[in-house]
Each structure stands twice: as structure tokens, then as C-alpha cells.
Length: 144
Picture 1 (tube, one colour):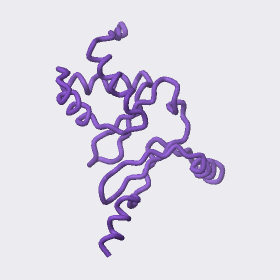
Picture 2 (cartoon, one colour):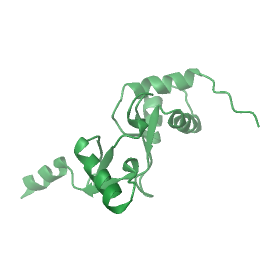
Picture 3 (cartoon, helix red, strand yellow):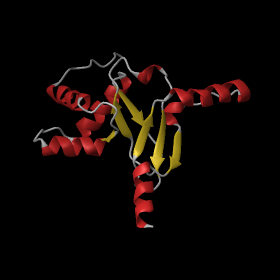
């Protein structure tokens, strides 16, 4: 079976240009659809979903699936970012649902420990720490 030719379409270019303006930001497909609609861009939802998956395959986006109840998030990384297997973890606030991307050298020690002492290779791209974010903690403290 012949491989599918990738075409550079106007819609793909519009999507990539928007994503480039949000490096390090986690966006759902719905966030992107809403943005395109608010800007008057005529890109269908199914087209956005297809293009996002293609951009993940090309290494331009990272895709994060946190749990079954949360929609997948996409992050623009370009071709030369941490998609090379570097360590990046995530923190999810149990109160507001915000997702914090951590690209932190300190966390590398966890991966090394698990491999060295337990023979277990951690997939940091799918590792999520659950807790309460700084903003929600401050909000709780102000109520007391």
C-alpha cells in the first residue's frame, strides 16, 4: 500500500501558525475549534482533529492524555523540542483541573531511581502528579 502524501493546506498552515503562538500551553481540540470559530476561520472540527494527530505524528505537537475523563491536550513543541524523550512531567489540580507542564531536571532523579533500583522505565510524558495548585491553595487560605 502506498504511503499517504502529506499536503500543506491553507487550513494546516493556519492551525500551525496558531499553535506556534502558544508554545508551552496545553490546548484541547475543543479550545482550538473555539479559537478558529471566533477568528472566523472555516476549519471543520473533524479536520482539526485529523491535523492535530498528523502534527503529533510529525513531532510538531505533543499529545497528553491524562485520564479517561479529561480530553487530550496538545502542546506545540516544534521539531527540535523535548519530543526527543526528555523528561517532562505534569501536575493536575484536583480542584480547578489545570494542567501544569513540568520540564524539570530535579524530576530526572525519579526516572533514574526507578530504572536503577527497580528496573522500571518511567514514561514521563504520561506521568501525572495530582494535588492542589498554588492559585487554589491561595483561594482556600483567603476563605479562612
